[in-house]
Length: 159
Image 1 (tube, helix red, strand yellow):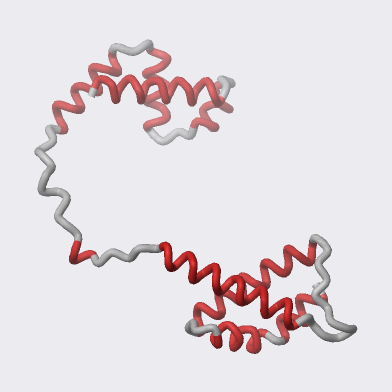
Image 2 (tube, rainbow, N blue to C red; image 1 turned 60 degrees about the vertical axis):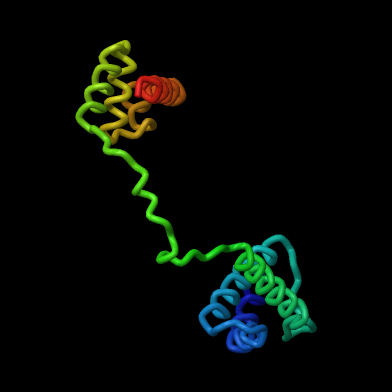
């Protein structure tokens, strides 16, 4: 922890270095904070960032910051921003959905199922988590999960 404290004493220097790469102050702060996390993990595995007794290896920190900045730029390069005004109205091709008829189909499809499958589906759909249901009923988690997925697949086929 001692080396991390030495590193933090130069916080404004690290932020200035990242800003010199060409990013704004907020982004520079974020990169420096990520650098602290990365260095902390490396220190726990045995990394030595000291240079002499009372100093830090500036070159290692500089390289770490520049690598993190370049990684960020690469990710931004692969990100596509879409102007919302240029989007085509995708809802115009949709037809009217008769929810009452579909509800009746689902109800009918559920009535065709074995009572156990129907009850598991209804419980999970009502908000009970599979893990909770498994603990309460002493039925295996994957058995309940498989039953639920089987019912969902059956309903999709019916619709």
